[in-house]
Amino acid sequence: MNKAVQVENLYLSINGRQILKDISFEVFEGEVFTIVGGSGSGKTSITKCIVGLWKPTSGKVAVFGKDINTLSIIELDKLRKNIGYVFQGAALFDSLRVWENVGFYYLERTDISKDEIKKLALEKLKLVGLDEDVLELYPSELSGGMRKRVGIARAIATNPKLIIYDEPTSGLDPITSRTIDNLIVSLREKTGSTSIVVSHDLVSAFGISDRLMVLKDGQVVQIGTPQEILSSDISFVREFIKNGLGDIKTRIEAF
Ligand SMILES: Nc1ncnc2c1ncn2[C@@H]1O[C@H](COP(=O)(O)OP(=O)(O)OP(=O)(O)O)[C@@H](O)[C@H]1O
Image 1 (tube, helix red, strand yellow):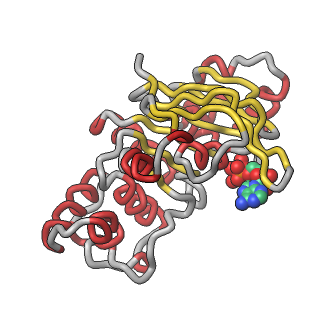
Image 2 (cartoon, rainbow, N blue to C red):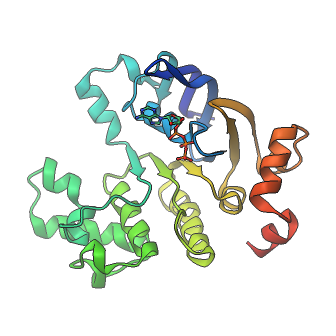
């Protein structure tokens, strides 16, 4: 299987404080790989290293076979076109309409006509279950679930091969969370993309992931399939699952 992402012995320190310690994992093409762990365990920091926003103190991060820390700015820019990032809270531009948010890359970086961009935006909005009714709306006119969908539509606007979702279900009610989960899985099927999901929501993580990575204090505790993690004999993992899922069986069956 081809590797979409390979991280080897990654260390990250900020202002002398160690944030990530000896992180190694790989994500295969087409996989849904979820990073779970408590607050401040380093989940988002890993994704920032993957997209090259943060430079590791040491270690290697390769995306589609390219070591991102050796790329020129132009090469990194080209690679980033292949990575869609869904920000926590969607991070839409409040003063722009939905189609402008979704088509932002094309508005900023190309001279494609506005009509064409609107068409492109609609195509992506349809993929996330929205239609032309939302094109002209502003983010403040959308529900939380719709905002997340628009954030996802924007992230897939450039047809990226890798999509990183940072807390895609945070702040949503359980039913809307499950529709976002279904969307992540269906997008993988429709586009063949690889997904890395950062999540606090263990019901979601166990429902959508091919594999999960459990972090604690900037270190990997375990990587495995949902079954492997659910039957872990590592006490931290068992405790983490117990706190996050409660009665696992009932919650998973309800999924
Ligand atoms: N810009 C920054 N400057 C200094 N320290 C930071 C910065 N961003 C994050 N950190 C620290 O790095 C550690 C890991 O943060 P990170 O956001 O990666 O964790 P997380 O697991 O994603 O947390 P959460 O689930 O709360 O979002 C935390 O201790 C945090 O305080």
